[in-house]
Each structure stands twice: as C-alpha cells, then as structure tokens.
Amino acid sequence: MDAKKLSENWQDHEQALGDQFYTALGLPLRGHWSTRKPKLMGHLHHYDTEILIVDDAHDLSLEHLMLLKEVTDQGKLQYDHPLGLCLVAAGRGDTIPLKETFDLPDPTWLQFRRRFDKLQPFCRIASHTSDEVRAILATLEPVYQPLFPQLNMRQWTSSIYGWLTNPLLDPTHSGRVTMDNLMKLVTTALERSYLDGDTEVKAERFKSAAELLVLRHDTLKLIDGAGPDTLAQDQGKAEPATVNGQEPEQQTVPEKEQQNPAKTVETAETVQEREHMSKTANCTFSGELVPIDLKRFEISSISLVECPDCGRMRSLSPSKSILRFKAHTRRKQQTPLTEKRWSSTGKTDWDVVGERASEEGEEI
Image (cartoon, rainbow, N blue to C red; front, side, top):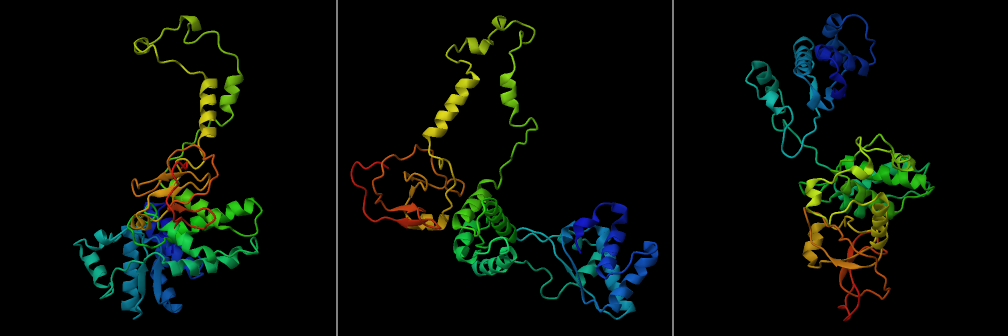
C-alpha cells in the first residue's frame, strides 16, 4: 500500500485505505463502503494474508490507523487469524515517525502499542555499504544493457561509494549510501551517455554526475518565464524618446550618486565584454567542488591540490565540510609537476601523487 495516495479527501481516508486493500486482493469495488468494510478481514483471511505492509506510513492519518486497528482486531477475535502489520515510514537519524501518536494516553493507542513486537517494536533500515552498492549496480546492469551493450558499472563501485558519502550527501557521517542518491547518480550518468551516443558509461560521467549532486544539493534555481531571447530582442528595439516622462538629457542623478562621482553606469556592452574577459581568463575549473574525502584529506597532511583541467596547483582547506578549488587563470607552462599533491589527472578518483619537492622558480 502507498499511503501518499490516501490523503486527497480527509473524510474518505478510511475508505481510500480499504479500497487499496481490495484492489491489492484483486477484488471489485462494488457497493457502498459501509457494506464492504465488514467483509475486508474475511477476504484477507480467505487469501491467507499473513502481513499488511503499508509504505509511506508517515502520511497515514488517525482514520487510517484506526481502520488498521479494527481490521487486525477483527482478524484475531472473529477469525482467530493473527494478521501482521508493518508500517514503513521515512525518518532521519533517531527520530521515530508516528511515535507521538502511539504514545498518546488514549486507550486506543495504548492497545495499539501493546501489540508491537516485544523486542523490536521500531527498526531502522540502514543505507547501503560499499558491497551493497556493488550488488545494486550489478542488478541494474542487465536492465540498461539493451541501450548500453558494454555497460559495466561495478568496476566504478569504489569511486561511486566515495563520491556518495561526501559530507553533504551523508551529513550524519554514517558511511552509507542512500538508494535515492545512488539512483540519481546512475540515471544522470546514463542519460548523458545515451545523449552522446555512447555504448558504455565512463568513470568521468559518474564523477560529473556526483559533482552535480553535491553542487546542486541545496541550490535554488531561478526559473524566469521571460526566456533567454528576451534580452536580445529588447536590445534590438529602438530606444524610447522619453524615460519616466522626461527627455534622457534631463534625467537627474540621485543625490547618493552625486556624492560619489567616481561611480559610473556601465553599458550593456561593457558588462558583456567584462564577463567575456573574465570567462576566458579564468580556468573552467575555478570555483568547482573537489570531491576528496575529508578524512583522507586531513590524514594525508597534504593541502596542495592540482587542477584537473589546467594543472595549476593551489593550497586548499575545507570550508563547511567541502573543498572548493580557488579561482585561477589557466596554467601556461607545461613543465612536469613533481610536488606531492592531490590529483585526479588520468585517474578515476583523487589520490596523492608526486614525490620530489618543487624546483625553485617553477610556476604553480
């Protein structure tokens, strides 16, 4: 059962849940709910139903829970049929969903609580270990192999596990990977590879998808209905003869701007030229997130990191539990780098490379 489908009409909560049970049993929804409700447990008993599993149980209302209690009561008293009940709810950390309801002093919930498992009334399903991630990837491969005949995602298990246990995606530092993040990573990498006509998914695709998951984790995207061509269309129009009812020459300068004569109004051309120069001067990796595990980074005692695009090196330190590469111009010299540093060049993951100290005067 999916509890999310049951919240459309508050007054019909009970019937909505009962109808889902009828549908799951393959029974027609004939007659009024008041006549079908007493027969529900009889049908469950007829089909030897052992347990009811309700997904998204955190969306259940009091009416839903009351119906579940009535059905299980009827099964025990009228049919001597002990019917199991498992409520699967979303939670975070040690928070127990629905516990506030079950802890109410009303006799109804005291009875409900007494029927919980004696030793394990509340269980938390942990996210996935590295071995489990490998097993999941192995299960997904046959599903997508019609589109990617050479697909082999298992070979990147170690890297995928490392990326998805980034502190932003694993804030409790559990060392586990959630199914949600894993599927987002896989589907994003597969979609981009498919659009490029690839027959397999390379490590760079997974790495790029992981970086997007981290960078966009709490990003608010502005959606403007004007569209991207609006600015170009506006610039092509003739300038109006008047602005705010006055001739352009007669526009007055605000008092604050009069006090600061050095401040000038930049034209659209000046802004565009400045942005173009900024983009061409800086390396494309400027400001990008560096997905190095912070524990490994701190244990190594090496803060020097090599830009994967141009090779320039910068000393980095974590900020808010993430590493971000500083803005920099592209490295022009192609002399070999020998410093001990973090690098991902030619690799599927970041690692410490280099042994000798830098030669005096070498550009970094």
